[in-house]
Image (tube, rainbow, N blue to C red; front, top):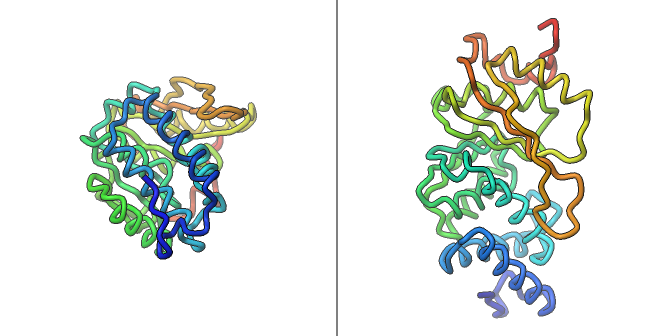
Length: 253
C-alpha cells in the first residue's frame, strides 16, 4: 500500500510508523465495511499529509493521522442520517476532515468542502485529485456568502470550527428541512450547550442527540452533537460574513 521510493513523500517515515498505520487503517476499513479501493484512497490521503510540510494540520504522521483524522471523521458513519445522506457539506473543511474521508466512504454522496482560505482550498483540491476522490468538490467561499448552498444539503458536518451557536448559524441555512447538522465536540460544556439551545430555536433547529463516541482507542471526551432542522430558517439568516462570530445569537437576539 505504501510507496517508499526515494521520491516518495513517505521516504522519511519509519517502517514501524507505516506498519502501525497500515494495521490501523485495515482495521478501520473492516469496522465500516470499506473495500480495498476505498482503503487505497484513504492511504493516499495519509501519504499526502505525511509528504507535505505545509499541510494545514499539525498531525501528519500516518500512525497518528489514521486515528486523529480518519477514524475521528469516519465515526460519523455510526449515525444513520450520515450513511443515508445524498448531499453533505463540510463547513470550514480545513485540511479536509471530516469531509474527505466521508466522501471516500460514501461513494454515492456528493460532498461540498467549504473553506474561505485559498491556501486550504488549494490543498484540499490537490488532496482529492491525488487520492482520486471524484464525489467531493471544493467551494472556496465564506459560508455566509455561498447562496448556491442554501437549503441544499441533507447533512452538514463541522469539526473544531467555532463555538457551537456560531456553527449552528453557519449550518442552518444550508440544510433542507429535515436535514441534520453533526458537530464534533470535545468535553461537554453545559453553558455552551444552553447557548446553543437558544440559538437553535431561533434558527429552526432542534437538538436531537449528543452521542459520546470513541473513534479510536484511548480517545476521551469525544461527542457528536446532532441537530435536526425542524422548521425553515428565518430569512434574515445567514447574516453578513463575520457577524455570527462577532455577535453570536443569544436569548435576546
